[in-house]
Every structure is written in structure tokens, then in C-alpha cells.
Length: 265
Ligand code: KIV
Ligand code: NA
Image 1 (cartoon, protein in one colour):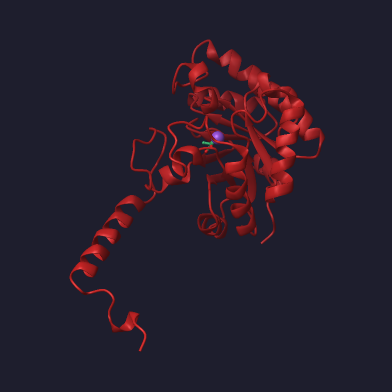
Image 2 (cartoon, rainbow, N blue to C red):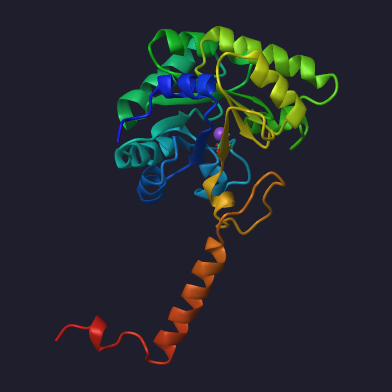
């Protein structure tokens, strides 16, 4: 299969073809999603919650994300792999952002990086892009600034639309190849999508964007906690695995496993 590149994102918007992305944190799911034709895989700092068991994404480090990103990048033949820059790895300035982006590109085989923030991160985006590294921007609700935003709150409502549009303009100007809109009203996301030349990717931003992205563990029902309203669950992996584990436990307890077909002569 022909590799997805940034050109694919541009052309998809021009041609009205929807772009699809899922998060992935390991080789097994990366291979499955890639073979299924998902356009891009984000090795998100949502691994903080979904792999490492933290309450938020804030504690996640570059050193934790690098091996996950390497596993995902090494597994795909077609999908575009994006490394998520964690909290504390780019906010200090453009130099810090570039150092972090270079680490991901050199050490993982990812094809691009993502970082949070619009106007406030424009200098960082510009510097990384100038070095030849594609950047996906992320505006609207930005989980790394949960405490600054006062919680898990929808962005771009009412007066908030002005900030959202300013952020959208800033990241396009800075050279981002695409922008994630997280948890904004559908109407605001539609306005941003019509305004920008670069594709918009919705995470809880309604249908009128150029693409959709979901956290795979929410989407596949592996998450056992609460999932956001915008997630549509496409499988019940927690149910399937829970049932399998209970059946196997009973089979072992009752002597049904292992059978002769699972044993060596
Ligand atoms: O880390 C992540 O999974 C993300 C997406 C939800 C946008 O940043
Ligand atoms: Na993230």
C-alpha cells in the first residue's frame, strides 16, 4: 500500500474525502488499524490514562512515549504515524519544542508530531515545521491545560468562538498540516473547517470537519470507566476479555484446560 503523507491530508480536504485516525500505543493494534485502512495513528499522551494508569495526561514523559511510538511506527505499512508531544516538552519555547520533535523523529520512525495550543504555541509550531517536521496542531479543549481551563469543559462556545478562530488562524499561519478540534460545538467546528485551507480533525467536534479521530480504547469498549458523550463504541472488548478470562479460570479450575490437544507427548 502507498504510504499516507501530508499531501494525502491536503488532497482529502480538497476532494471532500473524510480522513480517519485512531490512537494506538502498541504494535498489535497498530498493525490491525493500519490493515483496516485507518489513515493516521496518533501515539497519544492519552496513553497516560490508558496504558500507564495516571489520572491525567500531565505526568507523561517523552521517555515513556518513545518506545510506544517506535512500536507503532514499526508496525505500519500505510498509516501516517503521529507522535504526541507530552506536557512539559515544548511550552518553554521554540528551541525546546524542536529538540523534542527531533528526538521523536530520530528515535521512533514517526512521520509527524502533535502539540497542543493555538496562538500560544504558534512559535513552537513554526520552528518545528521549518526544520522539516510536519506538525498536527490541537485546539479547543486541550487536556494538558485541564487545570488552567478549569476542567473538562467544551471550548469555543459563545464568546469563545473568537479565541477558537484566532487559534485556528495561528496554527495554519505557523505551518501546521492539520488541526485537531477537541470538544467544540459542531457549528464552531464547521466555521473553522470552512475558514481554513488545512484539514480539521474532530474529536468531539461534530460531523462538519475534514476528518475524525477517537481514542481507540474508548472506541473499542476496552475502557471500563466513563467515556465522553462523543464516543461511539464499536466493540465491547472489556466484555469479551472479561468473559474469556472468567471462562479460562473455570476451565483450569475444573480440569478442562489444558486438553490433550494443548499438550506435548
Ligand atoms: O492523546 C490523545 O489521544 C489526543 C487525542 C484525543 C486528540 O491528543
Ligand atoms: Na494528547
